[in-house]
Image (tube, rainbow, N blue to C red; front, side, top):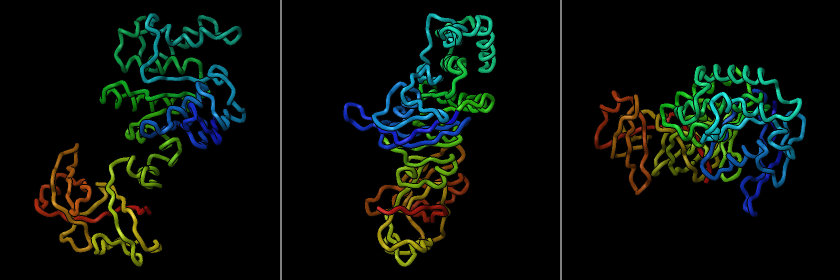
Length: 346
């Protein structure tokens, strides 16, 4: 099911939560709404679900205007951060609930409901636990039950609001891989909200980066990480460094000296040079390079992160190196040059 959000604006007591947001979600796509708290991502998800009504704009499911339809009429599957399971129902009863409460001819026979629920429990790897209650399950198992319950109604769109936010790091990591596998097998059009960039980049076909009620960028994980289109996206996705530089005749200058980086076609004047800590190479001297004094060094998985004081009360710069390369650094002075970078105007 394709979903099209068209020029949506949402206000709460005259406070604008979304500003003229438009988004096309492809059928069968797994898409992430990513942004900091207050960016509008959960509001957008609730509007797609029908839990909120837009102040202005339209929402289409396929070619049909769904803007005025209820959650039930839109046939939405929703998974919440805190599971929202019925404590007094068994696992099987929880998964069956959405089908049992359907009215009239839309309700399948009891035998079909039970068969569908058991099939889904097998899909989410919980076979044999159908008689347990939520309190007898781990957090990861409860979230699997919640997902099975959402899929039981064969939804047009599956929506997940911070689905792994209440779980510890290792369980989140395991469930991310598992959710991607489930999506590839079932093919549901799926939208999930997260503030965790690793989660978005690992799971999604496309990432929608949001800030202050607007969409900053939409693209594949590679596109938003490697080619961010704004300082916000560059700073929010992954780690980044920012230097105030000057452009002069196609040359990037820092502290009055050339960095040897080509900015041909860029107009002269002040700019911000953004680069990632791992996109650097060391220099033997400070000529045409950035230099600083190491102030800290820490091991992060298979790399070492070096924090550098580059002087003049500027924010510290962080570079990321293989441990073997970091061990050979001069403790008093380190020079480097960005290998991948992007310029933004103030």
